[in-house]
Length: 334
Image 1: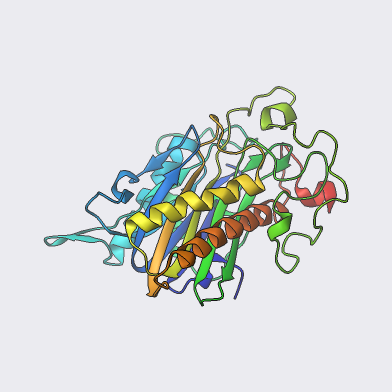
Image 2 (image 1 turned 120 degrees about the vertical axis):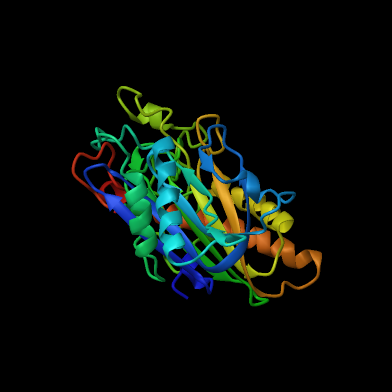
């Protein structure tokens, strides 16, 4: 186990970043078409090809998923991934034509200190192609891909991933770009809200504080942390929860909804009107899920815990770059 979403057999992930832009794209490539759905619980989402993921829609499976910076411009990244897949002969067959199915979600990182003064076509189509071409089982966390320019309240955000295997042999993996309005740490302390779910010291092995920090229930937001409040609406956490359990679209949607508990466990506050919080749920269909209610409950609970861990890892692994607005967790607490 790599403690990455690529512990799900058949999933590869690629990152592409533009350091001057302070933005980037992450592409998850499926080795074969996979069942997927999604759930949005934030008030300001930016998406592409998500309607088809609803259980009552015709297309059952997808070829890739994209998480990108760039706000609405970042949706172009899915076109680059789609173009790369088309060159591989992938896609939904409509007569002699194959159309790669590539849903996408974006986060807002347009006012994070990077140079966004591009001319003509946005750079995200090319970033999408590059991310797809780079897809492999090992990939970088922190300030890479969709996490390149991510910020949270008072700290740099980042790209996180985690995985776990249930007692019944089912594997769960999470991938998330954390650009939240709120905090991943408790008040002014270094302790992560996700601490109860940590495995093997993956984000510092700090545990919970002996006593709760002062004002821990008073949310610090990104706007509070900036002197001019200019990034108060520059938010959104977007993620993917994947499993090798064989489930349909309706169950995948329920899994995405349950995985949102991981946002609530790791970020305070979450699902705000200024966040576009979204989770895709993906099934490789490699293993049978035991046919009882308890099995799906364990799958959903495991998804939430794995997502919470991935969020904390994204913050913990963030790296400093020139012209950063906020420090990294390592610079402030490490």
